[in-house]
Length: 351
Image (cartoon, rainbow, N blue to C red; front, side):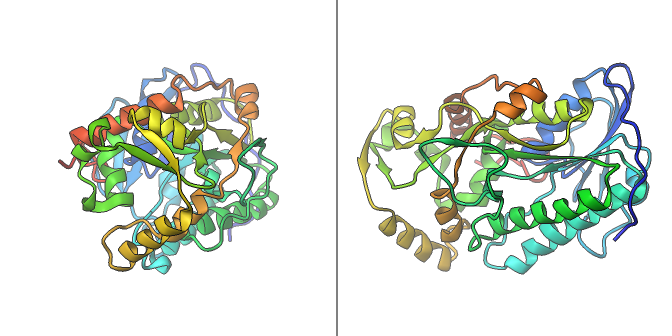
């Protein structure tokens, strides 16, 4: 571990020409964050770090191919002189080999955190998730004080919760670093459709099947109520956290919460009550046979996620989503049908 950091005064938000490093800059969230940063006149330059350099080239942005896992290159020189590091890098797969995702998501994140301190960067903005939260209510909203113990059976939620504990100690050791933890709901945009299909559904879900004419009904499972958000709206919160002197956790989600009735409305279908057990059993069988990449443990976690109160983000970040959760999902589904993507390795389009 690095020694305690020396406090640094954050730069002014306007006209400062701030330098921002984005770790994991070519995925769903990273591309939206980089685009907003590049368009902001208060940002002087953006350094995007990813495993593979993309063909996409927004203004004021340079790229470096970097692996954050142990044994990767020294991150300190890349962070030196930055006003903020936004850490978004995450590996969702392979769910059958959790030690591999742990190596990137936990050990790699720890390397990022330590390099931020060693480089004297004054602000670390970390992508946590609603998945970090312990199971909670579906009939009321919880704020950022809800326990972040995750759902221990799923690698994704277990890793997100572990990083929350790591940051608890990190903040104590490095009081001079302004640490922000973003906890968004499910993030969707048109350009992320191909990537998210590969990550969660695999090739067994042709995009052309995701349309009203072929989905007559949506099962209403116990606990199926979650929050969604357009990725660009989440990116706006990250941008606000760069320039505002905030710290701590922020819930991010749009209205309304998504349940079977909302999904049925999107597909012009009906909903019907159904126990979760048969769906889980089918998913578990498909996952075991490697027909789908999403694990049944993640399905269990989704049914247990609490609903989040986003008042703090509105009050302290001046943040407000510009799209409803329904609009975000509709855009994503349109992208899924059209095989949309971007010129980055994670978002590469696929028919």
